[in-house]
Image (tube, rainbow, N blue to C red; front, top):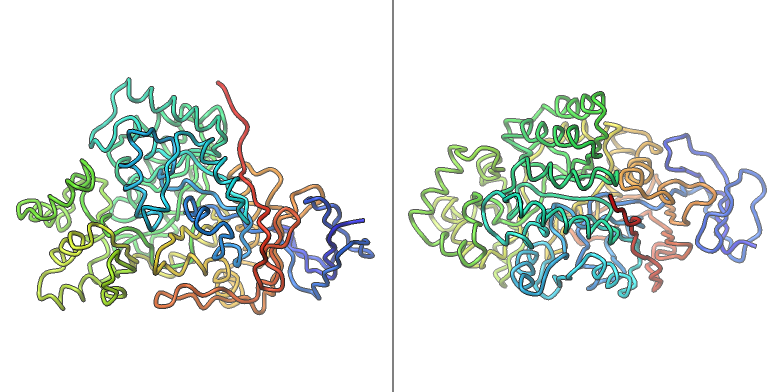
Length: 532
């Protein structure tokens, strides 16, 4: 007899095939039977009354690396129907970090985690994954090796290219992380310290990655002014080293690139014609989110936070920053302020209690202080000791829609946990089901579910997830497509969605009738060790 039987379900199986009415039986954490006939017997019968039953959503781009220790229930994600998250994004991760490097790297990860206390470091990825399992998360979690973490372990915060010996050290650390179970390698080429790497460094790391057939996942050097040059570099690395490529949070930033989404998507299509296995993920918003310090040119980050704060207080350095931003003097630097304008950079939260700044743009702060926007920005970074997070309005709706409709694009929230987060942390998946499917009819429900399940599972090599089929893991979500919605907004982001009734992980309810349970059945997902 089955443990749970879901009856009268509209089954959307994750493959993109048309839905059908049927029943699903679960036993010992596995999908035991999928049938159109009479429902099987079960200890627990859940009548869905025609609601959708789909594979649990696999989030392709998550930043819950440290939140799993503060909130093992992973509340914002579980309520969206997410059952698996992929961590270690943008080249920034918790390991491998030696004891002598720990304090410096913990401070670097602070902007990602939201607080120093929630950014512990680990000497190996194996140790980190063991700690996650000990935390007993509600959801399944896999992680990527981080280029930035590995580079920092070898070079620290030095702003230069790596020597041949240093490249060998980085390759060895990557091998260890892959053997510990990492699902691939990520980088964030606009972030310190990996912003200082050259293409040869990326190629050297991908040579280690290539025999494993695990993906190279990248926040490329530019999503704005230098977008197409950055895409070319990324694709060329994949072509030359024969690694699968995955483009993080695919977008077009700033007026120069607006309206060119068809051209950007064609880069992926042409790469695939050349034999490059390339995909992308996307969140359904025109605004992104990051740390305000990301607007500073690369040289301002060179020797760590203390030196950055010194430069921010130096008039000569400020003049140099202003020229770099205004004149785009640094090739391939993702110059957010120059690309989108200060009026489109909004303060999400600050480390101090000066909450009146939250919700104001840099232009509005400058006006209130009777100064220019650059000085307002730099002064704020000094006052808050760099502890400022922003929402940056950089895209256009028609470009977002074009990218979403590509069959190569899956879904990831890229949600950063903070006091006042971007609404994508709570609203990504219901927003897609509500606005992109029900209201705008951009793709069918079946195709949207494929983008949230089978496609990201395939990208990250999750063989037992992403498809509702006999023998697969019993990670499931049930929702009402006519009701699912989110009220999460830029002004009030911490709002849970409606219309998502049940979420099951490993055969156990983590959400039941819309209410989170105390069950925490999740576990880490680890790739098998590989030795070349």
